[in-house]
Amino acid sequence: MTEPGSNVPPDSALEAIREAQKNGHLVFLCSGRNYEMLSPLLAYGFDGVIASSGGYILCGDQVIYDCPMTEEQKKRAMDVLEANGVYRTVECLNGSYTDEGFKLFLKEHGGEGGNSELLRWREQIESSLNILPMKEYQGQPVYKIVIMSPSREQLTVPEAELSKDFALCIQDSDQFGIINGEVVNREFDKGKGVERVCRYLGVSVADTIAFGDSMNDVEMMETAAVSVCMENGSERLKAMADRICPPVTEDGLYRGFEGLHLI
Image 1 (cartoon, rainbow, N blue to C red):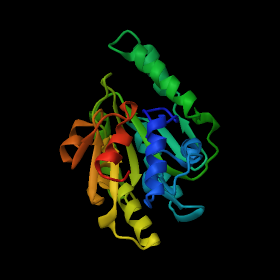
Image 2 (image 1 turned 180 degrees about the vertical axis):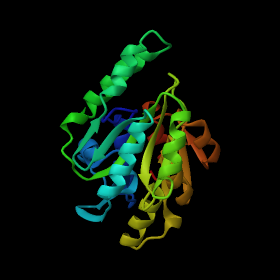
Image 3 (image 1 turned 180 degrees about the horizontal axis):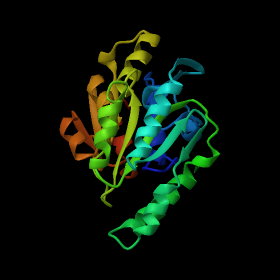
Image 4 (image 1 turned 90 degrees about the vertical axis):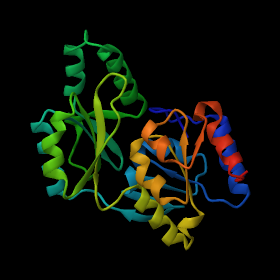
């Protein structure tokens, strides 16, 4: 729908959505982002939204699922991540807050590899998605924790201690060598979100199609009857997808809808 870190979809994607809806299809936005981050996109007329990796779901204007972490879960996750040097961004319904320590780490290691470029990218992401410093967090319910770790080893203890309640979705290392991922409650994921929407609407999962690009889309891709990965997406996700379509910036969504005869 958009490039990573952006909330502005290309015109071709909007045209695809409108044409599909005219043909009687329902188009939902299914994202790891929280509701506030997605709110600029909701103006484009989606039929509903699965936000926070499935933790908060809207069908039209109706909230059909709302599952933040318990206070005990949140404290345990935050403490073990901090103790192991893993940087955290907590995502609430109407705000996201990040450890400033990650940017300090990048500044201290600015001469190593692409850390200076990663710092600029991170600051751009925080600005465009309105991610605030952790010191401004006031204890609101948390739906998901995004993590950034300097090494894979630093995630070993958090994975072991949190595995009962949480799935740690670890992405492929980015181009700068930083390990990133998400801590998501096992009560939900994007695939369960698709199933919850289908039950609410009384439609079959066999009639669903999912478009994704990263490893946090795995459950959604496995659940939907047809899975489509963007060409610029994760190599592992492309290997499991039913179809590949061009990147969104190259009219990928439109061409994908066209190839599936949605438009």
